[in-house]
Length: 284
Image (cartoon, rainbow, N blue to C red; front, side, top):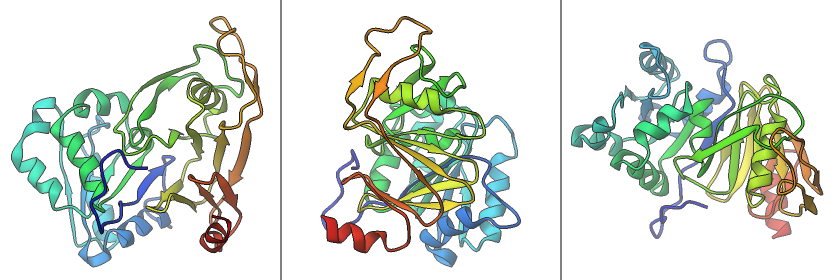
C-alpha cells in the first residue's frame, strides 16, 4: 500500500485523512485518537500548516494537541521550496511520531512540497511507522492522485474535476473532503472515471478514516464516509463525452460508512461494526 518500502520488522504508520472542520474543542474525538495513536504523553507531533495562509494555524494546532496530552508538538513552516531542503527542519521531522497537515489550499502543498526532500522524508517516515494525518486540503494531499479543484454537483461531467500528483503515501484511494456539505459526489465520480483502480473516499466534515497497516479503514467522527468502488465498473462513457456533458457510469459499488464501520482496501469488503478485523480475517 505504501510506495516507500516498509523496512523488515516494521509496520507502516496509519494514514488518516480527515474531511475538514473537525471538532477541536468540545468533543475532539478525531484529534484525540490521533494523539493517542502517536503515543499520548510520549507523542511527538509535527504540524505542517503550509496549506493555510492564516498566520495562527500552526500555533492553534500546537495548543490543541498539547491540551489533548501530546508530550511534544511543533509547527514547522514550509513557506518556500528552499525551506524543504533545510537540514534542521528535516532533522526535526525525523524525531516525530506523528505528522499532521492542516487545511487550506492543497495546491500550495503540491507546489511547495512536491518533489522535495521534505516530501520524500514524510513518505519514508510513514513507511517506518510514523502516523500521518491531514485535514481538508491536507487530507486530499496524502494520496498519489489528488483532486486539485472541481465543480459541485451530484452528476459526473467531463471537465468538472482537475487532478494533480499528491504526496503519494498510497495509490489505493482518491480523497474528497467536505463531501456531503459541499455536494462533491460528481467530481469524485469523475476522478474515478479517469482512474477506476482507486477507491473513492468522500469524507464528510468532522469525519476521519483511520487506515492501518493492514489496509483496514476505520471510520471515526460524527459524519459519514461515502466509499465508491469502481473496480468492477461495467461501462464508462468518459471517452465519448464532450466537455461539460454528463458521464455515464455503470456497475459502481457504493457504501455509506459511519463511526465504527470499516472497509478493507485490499479485499474491498465493507463491515458495519467493530468486529471488522475478525470478519476480515475469516474472509481472507
